[in-house]
Structures are given as C-alpha cells and as structure tokens.
Image (cartoon, rainbow, N blue to C red; front, side, top):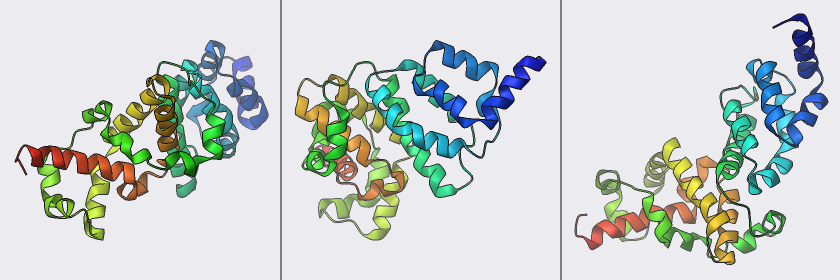
Length: 233
C-alpha cells in the first residue's frame, strides 16, 4: 500500500461519515474501496455505532436484493464490530438476517415498513408457516428428538428441555431456517404468507430465545410427529 492509499485508509478509519457515505448504497465500487483500503481489518471504536445507523437502510436494500450488500456483510462476519457483548450479539443477529435477505434472489412484493410498524399483528398465527412443505428441509434426527419424546407428546416442555431445544438450533440450522424464510418472503405466491415470513425473520433477531419462539417449537414438534406417525419414536 503506497502513501496515498495509507492516507485514504486513515481518513476512512478516523472519519466514520466518509465510510458511512460509501456504505449507504453498496455497489461494485464499494467492494473495491473496502478491499483496497482494508477498512474492516482493524478495530474501530466507531464501527458499532456506524453499523447501528446503517441497519434501517441496509434492511431496505436487502429486501430489494442488493447482492453487493451481501458480500459486504460476509466480510463483516470476520471483523470485530463491538467490544460490548450484548451489542455485538444484537448486531450479529441483525446483520445475519440482512445478509441472508440480500443474497436471496427476488424482490419483496410488499413494503417491509408496514410489517416493521405492525409486527405483532403479522405474527398472529405465523407459527403455522412451519407446516409449509418448504420447511420440511429443516431436519432434526431421531436421536436429537428422542430425549424430548414424552414431553412433546404432551405438548409441554420443562425448562431443562427448553435449554436442550435451544442447543438444537446450532449456527448451520439457524441459517437454514432464516434462508427458507427469506425465500418465502420474496417468492411465495400468497402475499399474506410472504408478509408473515418476514415478520418471523424480524422476530427471530434474538437467537438465545429460539427455544421459546412458537415457530421454532412448531418446527421441532412437526418433525417429532412425522416420526411418531411412522412409529419411529
């Protein structure tokens, strides 16, 4: 890196508004700039605040299918974004959703702002989306569900079992669930289902609470009853 590049790199790190302007509307030039000046490769005290300010704009761009944004967020997954654990977790969860939405082909057939403003209304009955055939790809093995069999059969989980369920939603499974919901948002033929799928995506921003989420519990329960119907469990 020559002296001119180092000067630009320093400015980008010292003046967050410059970086914010670059990141507001990601395009091919944005990727080139971030790579050339290695913007995300060092800690910046302002990074978490910068990302928080960009979340609403990035959410909208992701709904519109901005593929450049998806690449930026993949690069961010390797970078430290906040020294505060709960803030880092909050940002990671939201950036994961936005990245998956950005990488999912298609455009929202509705305004995301309506769902955001009336989230609880759209979540009513949204757990039924777990019954759609598109979600059958979310697999839980017989061995994973066997410790829960008696309680699932009674539609009741103890606190200990809920902790067990939480462990079922490991990172790979989390991403698979979010990816399927993102696909439904942009591609399902019924508008009401598209909206509810997006509402679910928004409501799953706290990964630590998935074991209490009606949609996630229904996914687990559905796989259990699939096995029970085949008399495997």
